[in-house]
Image 1 (cartoon, helix red, strand yellow):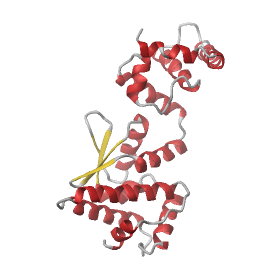
Image 2 (image 1 turned 60 degrees about the vertical axis):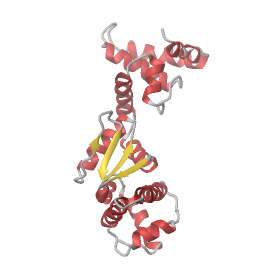
Image 3 (image 1 turned 180 degrees about the vertical axis):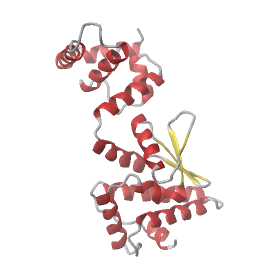
Image 4 (image 1 turned 90 degrees about the vertical axis):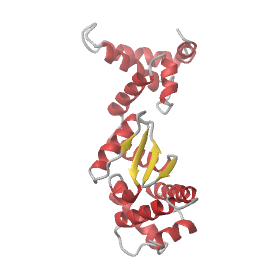
Length: 241
């Protein structure tokens, strides 16, 4: 037994956690004939209960989950994917996608925008939904980095923003007098193309990445119901396309 795995025992030995784990395990395991539950389902039951009792965090990095359980990162990723798939509603997924995309660390390389998304279900949902709008993400060998054409920024967001969120963004951009039409997709595509062009110039990569960070923060805050102002840099960016 590794030190990391042994470290779970003190957390699970607390009365409330132990009682909740024991009750949940009994309900899950003895809900059918003894021994009928496949090993993979037993593993998932234990993993789910460790999260639900607070012994493990659903937001912990994959590496941390793997170390805590003394399993491979691949198995930890699969367990987390199963947990998310079975417990997250579509509304939860929608909200998580917007949060993940607008708060990720970005890099602009050539004509592509790259960002890291570790959550396996959210990454899969982003890849699948973006394809419905003709945006095909490239995925790194590790599976954690997604890269999309920055010139399709509007198409990309069209796959995830609800009608209400899109309307809120249009209202904020019109209030800032940087959007004459209501076609948010075209406006964001044009901004993305401008960012890509700027990133190709000498010393322009850092400026482009700062612009993307500002834009993502603005989209994320607006989508969450806030009413942020538009920075001077973004006003310039929108009015110059």
